[in-house]
Length: 118
Image (cartoon, rainbow, N blue to C red; front, side):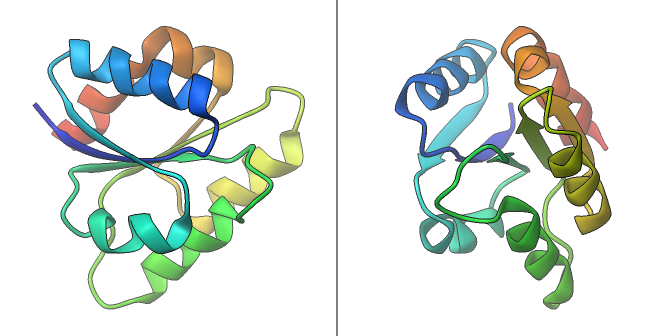
């Protein structure tokens, strides 16, 4: 079981991820804002960030975590499959894994298991 901090302001998809990971045995806490998840990220085994949100810059947030003392937990970002620039930016910001939203929906459990084991 991994402790997962989920930054996802999209209520529908966030609830889907929260429920799916919970069913897979993970403890998930969902956040709507960067300010709220920042403290929780330090205690999480995996940090998941919705890169499609327009209310924050997910890549900049993870980049700021890398700039602070101590490494952030393994990070998983998901994006719209047509938005290649977002994927590139997230990879450059230091995300451990960046996947299309559709893959996140299909494989969320194994993706988190993989990162939590790293």
